[in-house]
Image (cartoon, rainbow, N blue to C red; front, top):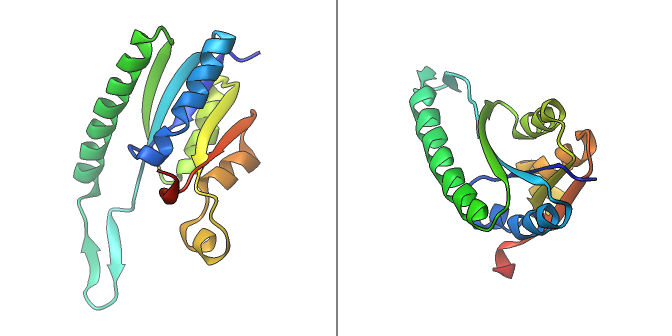
Length: 153
């Protein structure tokens, strides 16, 4: 049975399209939703061959993103709680979004991950990578993928 369902989000409308599926499953199985946002960490400097190493204050930027994520997840959580869906939220920092989702699912004993995927293929998938593919391959639990596209808005 499902007790904990994690929904990775990034503030986009596309990622939010996983929520109705996760909510329906949570209500059907009396499960708890966990809204998760992974703030991607970056190195403190970026190589710029023309200028040497260029310092970048990523910590300040990441802190701003983390605050935005907490506010955003808090609003979604409140709306779900008003609909009687038990909901928690978590904001993490990691170099790899996919690894963070998988590690979180393992550590928290998650029973299901509900996530959107863009369904990219070919060069687009190679360039942008696929968090969904990595999560699907490495997750310690079932993964429910919702295929979305910009055109299907």
